[in-house]
Image (cartoon, rainbow, N blue to C red):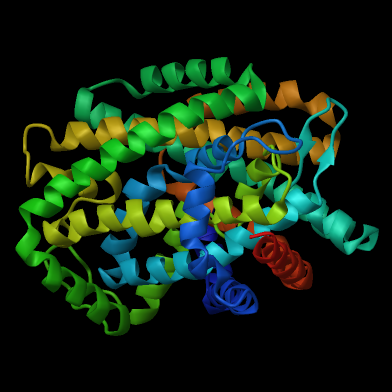
Length: 449
């Protein structure tokens, strides 16, 4: 096991090296500039579509709002709690700044992914709308690029068992044991049972659960973070100053913090940012392809809100809790670090609050990613694979809960990178389609007003 972990760690250093960081950020920046900053300019419009105009339009299996909640259910997970803490604990406070940068350009990436997913989606043998990178690679770039679509589907099917399953289950089991003395096997068995029940209903049940669970848990967590931040209100200017300074300058060792170079802050910020909001991975468009919508651009606007909410709101709140309370210089790691931040303000309930929140976040991620992996498996093997895949997915939840966390995180990072490469290539090659659809749709909107 030590040898495998060492090999994965070396592989991660390569796949998440400067080349990959540049690829992700430059693709998002290119799309943002090509769209003439539309993801930023149309942010208000996107919220209007979500809250007022996100009713069902056109063909699809779930509402546009449910599609966003399903994609958010997959991103709002341990990345928001443990991932942010890991980024800051290893890369220093400056890692949070690079998470913000990843999210800002990631909004353009997520927008482009959803536009292509809806534009090139298909109807499968069961009558469901299916789409995502594997479909817009094949249908947009042609059969000669089928090998790239196949690679994405293969990586996506496998990545789900890391980022969307075993990582989530492992972190939940560990936190439940430390906070409530619940045995890991019991946490695993309970999660596996609940996941299996939800998966029986397919995407519509997943969407209904996500549409209820995601808003409630997100608001509750943001309110909890807000309470901690208010208690340290006078320290906010110093915290932002520390974040900005650490983003461009090495951070010296302090307390339990080993110190970090600027490149480490960038690598951790980008890697954990992508792990959290998944912009560039190509996962979220799989959910948005199922939306009842008559416009790829409308759904794209709604889709980009996932990155905004996940990273620029939820991850920022977690980061501020960790930095304001000073726990990033302590010995606690991952979710325990975030729990320490809450415990610094309300000692009796802090770790319990984080534990419950993490359980809900992780459960939503597991059911959201089950849909992503299932669609990737269907692309490769047809609809006959759906039931076996659901059984294997449910079993993996239990296995992840009773195994260690280290190798799961390493494997998740590796598969994230492998998944992102085909998707980013497709986004660049199909960017003229994204730009044209966006320009024409907003031109029609202006004419009709």
